[in-house]
Image (tube, rainbow, N blue to C red; front, side, top):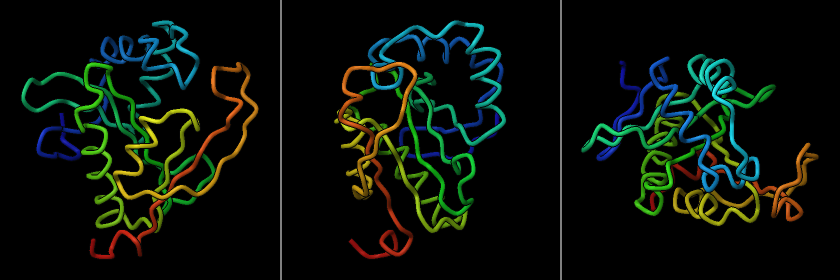
Length: 179
């Protein structure tokens, strides 16, 4: 399987059909899915027939811990539907066992660097629920800055959705500035 990107501790590679079990487990952890669907289970058929094929055909990458070879989650870097190619969205979802170990920041920083240095991005952005402090902290550690709070109409109301979604961004000119 071709490596898309490598960091000190991670290998990010394209998804394959063989990732179905890992993705099913990840997307059925209620703590992992808390800020996405309220922690509801995702049927295996949905993972195999919808989620995994979409991940294989787009900018999603399986995150593998180098030291153990374990699947720890995924990252994505891709323009949103109808969005500009030079403004990709950054996203990530990690197994609970991997939280608090810096993997979200490490993988995100590597993708941000690739977006600006190699892929011609002018802006990288990320979004999460306003109450998702862990995800917001990763964005901040990666140099993304708060842009706005907005409200979406979701079919299912989940705890904290009344506080809205937040968007963070990093512009290419700010990425180039020395720290």
